[in-house]
Structure formats: structure tokens, C-alpha cells
Image (cartoon, rainbow, N blue to C red):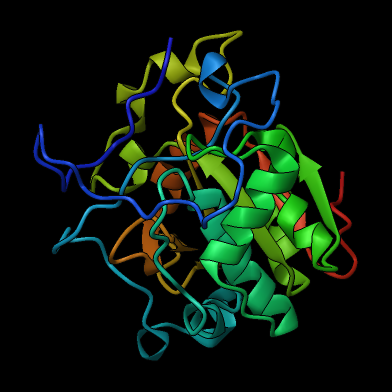
Length: 255
């Protein structure tokens, strides 16, 4: 089984255009498990959609600061849309790196590093490699499988950064019903629908009846502070087996 990258903004048969890897970067380094050989082995999505999707974006002036977990307004200032194919995890790590350290490193350089060291070849980042770029630039990370919402909230409460794997279909389609995703919920098939990595920057409880998860999504043209209803986020996150990468100084995720 393989994943079909979700791209509602691309017409069939049209090459969306992808920036090549920098000259001299090897693309055939040994990586025994091609990310798409295992349905649970990579978290990425194809070229991003463009145009008005109807998805809401976080607005600090419209929220109660006492009801917002994390710092989504500040995080929006470092948002960037990734350009390379299969580069959502690279884009997420680049934004987090700038947010936590002030270092702004180009996508081209980070892609070259991932290709040279991790064997990144443009088809996505394996979960085991998510966080490697951050560690190489001095940011400690902790990978957590089957993470809980409470653990995610704990990372945000400490002012650290959280990158998660999820199903882009469910966060890019407003009003998506998590119950429609029966395959990803089947026992023994964790991560069946996961195809994307995003940075979770906050959770907004300004409307207690309708909490919103705030994302910096490098794979969407409107991904700067993208807001997703908590229920829809949880359904999309479940498809990666609730995979979480916590990044920051303490990196401790409460069990």
C-alpha cells in the first residue's frame, strides 16, 4: 500500500513544479526502508494547495489570552511555506529552529543536510528521522508514540515546540467527519492515513465549546496559524499513532 499525496489545488496531469535538491547533494544514499514501502514509515504530503480554502487562521485580537495554551501569535511570525517535494517535516523543523534559537536556516540547506545525513530523497521524512535536523543544530528533542492530548498540552505549557504527524486530508477539509476515516482506525494499523507533519503552536479555548488547535503548516499556502477544531485534529493525529516530537530545552514529556 502507498499513500497518494493529498493536493486539492493541483489539476490532474499538471506538474506542480518542485525545487530540485542543491547541486552536489546525493539523492541515492543507502536508506534500507524507503519511506513509502511501509504505510506508517513517513509523514509528509505533496505540493501544497493554493487559493482560499475557507480555513480559519488564529487572530490574537479575537481570542482570550488567558484561554490560549502556547504562543501561537509569536509562532506565526516565523511561518514559512516549504517549496521542495516531500519537505513538510523539513519545513516544520526549520520554523521550530528559528522560533527556539533565532537561527534562520534556508530550506535548501536543511534539505541538503537531511539528504546527506538521513538519506532524504524527496519522498518524505521517516518518523525516526523527525527531529534530527533540530538536534544537529543544538535543539534537544524527544519522540513520543501514542502521545496523549495532555502530553501535547504539557509541551505547549512549557513554551516548547511540538511537531506531530497527521492526515492532511482531515485538517485541510473544513468540517471533515473523523468517523469517515474508518481505515486509519482499524486495530493493528496505526498511522494508516498519516501523510504530513506540522508544528502545533497552541490550543485556543476562547470558545470553551469549540476549542481550536493552532498549527503552523508549511505545506499549505494559508498555513500561518491555521486553526483546526480539536475533534478534527485528534482524528487526524490518531492516523499517525499520535506521533509527537517535543523540542526544547527540557524536552521532558510527562508520562
